[in-house]
Length: 428
Image (cartoon, rainbow, N blue to C red; front, side, top):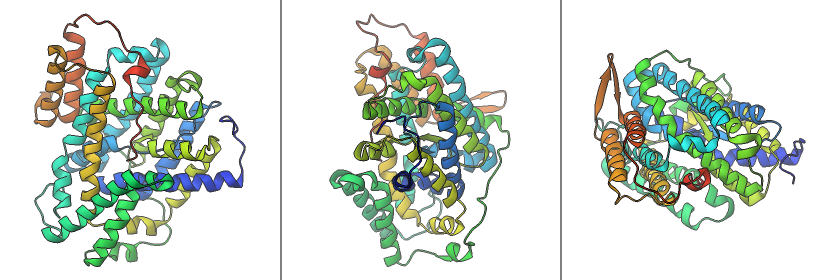
């Protein structure tokens, strides 16, 4: 089918529902882990996808946008420190960062961003996103709250459930075929949930209390400069992921979306979708690699299919019983998923360095990587006018500044955008 064919068909609607099913496990996992509302996340995923399509017309890539894993760690931290409304202001700012970056790309060209965001910076920044909250995954997998202070499930029961969940996710990833391989998170959740029922730790009260249909619990942001300065630099990582996904979908369809509609348009659509989602209380959006994988298998290139997926997501958001059911997922199940998920994110960062052939025996590169990791993970903090600057954001800014300041050794070849940004092809 021609990728520009935008006619609506019943068949497209059914395939769109299937693609939503592919994205569903990852889509709802982010709000479940971070304390946001899953129904709001469904609504904003659908809304964000429609915004993306309107922004990139007439050459619309077959892309579905939904909850970004890159923001799990900062949202968890932010909700604990500033509450949901304050954290949302930082997430809205992340979307605005995409918009500004898209304008820069339109003015200077896509390769220009490598001056500020080369692999030597983006690689370790992505690694810190996965590693900084690794203890949270361990706490949850062993039956504790995320901070490890309260025991929710006895250790023996929790570790059994979390390891079953982890094993099911790994097996689905490695041995699954076709659509099964695109649903490892959902399969892991199902296995862990069934095990939790067997051990008697599932509380169905949230389902019983929830009405069948209700308006999603939208939350508006409240301006918090500390949250903005903390989260804003983190947007670097999903911006890089966006470029990788555009390269991947271009390879799948045979259309160069970096040229038409252009990277500036696709990134603008992602930024507007992220800000709109965060303004309503949902997690930031990102292009979903698992849906791109489904497009590869089905060869369903018609962007109208993603429109149907977005419509189904918005409709499902008003089914309140779904949100109640998702709240019943026990902590060890989520912990089992996070054990792998945070490691996968860190691995994507390492792959960025490997793909770009970054030489870590070179002193300049070693210094940049080392300080990004230590500043972000080690708890370094700077105070600017009463606003603390730390964590992943501090690591990102440190990397950008060091890369601009430290002298470069002679190089035989400067990588272009496609060489420097590997497509994000993880099934998770």
